[in-house]
Image 1 (cartoon, rainbow over the protein chains, first blue to last red):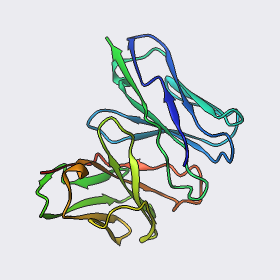
Image 2 (image 1 turned 120 degrees about the horizontal axis):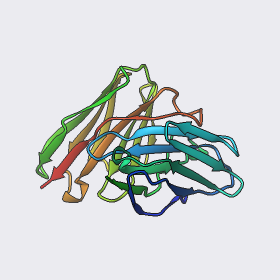
Image 3 (image 1 turned 90 degrees about the vertical axis):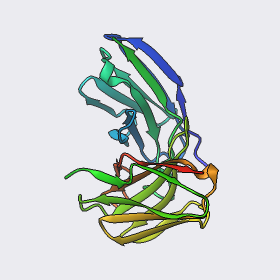
Image 4 (image 1 turned 45 degrees about the vertical axis):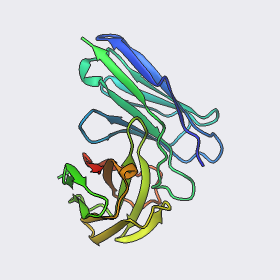
Length: 113
Length: 116
């Protein structure tokens, strides 16, 4: 069973603050890591899929890095906006089935204006 | 069309009822998924269909019965559910049936199920 941990559990920031949170996963037999954003009453939305050690991906003000040797990924949000408020989930696929994602518990981000 | 749709949005049913959840995508994706999400928990995989065949069943009780009539449609038939089955049921689809690690999943908005 994959053990996926996300920290912190929740985060409250002011509009304009930059923030980051962590996803930890087993470093052995690494396959890939998915990041999703889930806004309340909406569908989870894929942000990034990361596969290579040292990968850095960016989408607007959001970026993510990946360290497969030590088993973690960071998600960064620069200049947080109220519309960034959501739950951010990371999910590595399992080795036996590439489409079987195991989600972490998520980081709940609330951005106050 | 890059959307996964789910109906109904909300469902309330008794323990003796039979009901079905429906999921549809028109992106040509060949893998479709059912997830269950309880409050304050992450989504948990229930079933995966690859090329319209069931490829993963995560030891889900038989009172949940999935069906994939065609490549665009996925149903979840519910019968004799228990109150603890109340949850948000999410459907997802992906292009590649599982061999690629970068197999991004597209999610629907979910059906909120309450079992009385």
